[in-house]
Structure formats: structure tokens, C-alpha cells
Amino acid sequence: PQLIAATDSRNKSIREQLLSFRIALGKIGFIFLGMLGGAPIGIEGPSIHIGGSIFYGFNRFIKLNRKFLIHALIAIGGSAGLIVAFNAPIAGFLFAYEEIGRKLKKQALILIAIMSGIVYLFAIMYRGDANYLTNLSAYSLELTLVWQLLPLAILAGVLGGLFSKSTLFLINKFITHSKLKVITIAVVLGFIVASFNYLSTGQIAGSGKDEVLLMLGGTGLGLDFVAMKYFATLTSLASTIPGGLFMPSISIGAGIGSEVASFYTQIDAQVIIIMAMIAYLSAVIRAPLTSVFVILEMTTTLHLLIPGLMIAFIANWISKQIFAQPIYEALADNYLKLTGK
Image 1 (cartoon, rainbow, N blue to C red):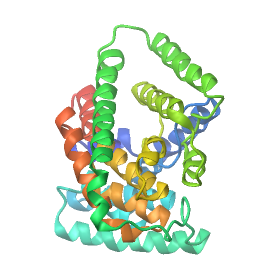
Image 2: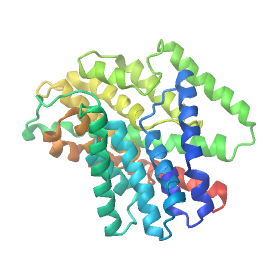
Image 3: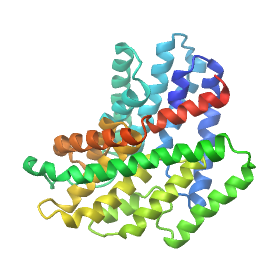
């Protein structure tokens, strides 16, 4: 949301408040503290903000003046952050387009695509091209069975839409317009997250990557994991502490898929989990193309593109009926309203 706010605002001071080397370092520190405290957050999502901050920070030295080049630089940073976090170059470019660069000129999008490719090359030179999750290329889905995924898309769409609507309601109620002291809100929300952490014996803490790998490996974690991860993530996001939404949403989607997989006798459980991750992430962040490619790239299942696109756009549409504005845009608007710019 910070990157969207920075590109939507015409005020340079707003960009300076939201994006800088200092902000990037501070965000890393706060995320580390949050994860130590057991919050259901990860570094993957914030890497987008960190990347945007670092790239925008370079503008102090290269001194770009044209607006579209500055916005392109911010979008490139966000794309780079996602690519480095998930090893997903296509998703990185699509995220820059869907969430940050919709208003950018064609020349800027070409520049973003080229730079995304360069960032990916450096990333694989440094740490290889291993999947972020695991290689599931052996699993497939007959297109004649795609219609069976409709109930899953509806379920994920409803849950994702309610998540976004509830998050913005809580932020507006208890953070933006609250008369309560900040310390009181922090203690209450922190206690709620800590309670979920205790009840789950620490399973809902962190990004959820390990839990996703367990579920993809055939280990079910139960409806209680899905429910506690859902509400703990909602509480953490509503508290506005720095933390990622990507990986916690993916883990919730995996939990949904794991629980409903037994109802699908003709489709592998791993495929159901992949589709559920796509559907729920798309419903929450409302960026269907990004959601499809980030999941398929991190599981080496690009051959599931057609069913993935179908379920992503259905879940996205259903979520839109519940909460019209995408969550990142709504949060960006909040930033701009608070600053009066």
C-alpha cells in the first residue's frame, strides 16, 4: 500500500515519508521483532515495500525528475522485492503492473519488464533457481474436471472478501478514528494474537511457509489451524504492525484446500491446495494474475495456468461483491487521508 500511495500522491514529501533507506531498515527491524513476538507475519510481503524504498532511495543519487520515471523506479523496486522473496519473475512484473503501475505509460512497463528480468538473473546467480515451496510439476488436472473447482472458488472468494472488509473496518474503527490510546490498542490486539499463538502451540506464528509445505506433503492441520491463522492474521494486519499479507494468505488458502480436498475424489489433494492458495490470495489482494503466477511459479505448476486463471478471477469477482475496493488501494487511501495529501 505504501508504494501505491507514493505513486498516487503528487507530493514529494509523501514519497519521502513512505519510501527511503531509513524506512527499509526500520521495517526490517520491526518485522524481526514482530516475528520474535509470535505474530503471524513474514518478510516476503514487506520485501515489496523494502524493495521500493531501496530503489526510490537511489533517486537521491541519480536524481530523476520526470514523474513517470520516478513511478517506474518505485514499481521496479516493488517488483524486485517480490522476485527476490518468491523467486517468481513473472509474478513480480505482474504485481508491479496490477498493483502499482496501472497508470504508467507503456515505456515504463517495458522498463519494468526488462529490470525484472535483470533482477531475476542476479537472484538466481546468488541463490539458484530453486522453488520457493516445492516442485509439484508431476501433478496435473484434466480440463473436464475444472468445473468442480467452482465451490472452492466461491468459498475462498467469500472468506477473502470478508477478510478485507473486516480488516479495513477494524483499522478505521480502532486505529484511524479511535479515541483510545495507542498503547491500549496495542496491548489488546497483542493479547488476542498471543492467545491464538498459545492455543495453536505456536503453529500460527510466522509466515506459514512450513505449514504450507506440511499440507502439500499430505499432513492436514485441521480447521482450527485455518480459523486461528485467519483471525490472527486479521488481528495483526488491523493493528498496522509491519508484516506481510502474501505468505499468511497463502497458508490460509492452503489450509482451506487441505480441508476440502477429501471431497474431491477425482483431483489430487495437492492440486486442490494449489487452487485454494490461488483463489484465496486473489480474493484478498485482488490481483488475480499475480496470485496465479506467484503460486504456480513457486510450485513449478505453470501447466495448471488455465484452471488457475479461472478460479482466481471467480474468487476475485466474488470478493469484489463483498468489499469493492482492493485492500492495498484502501490502505493506500488511508495513508493519504491521514497525511491530508
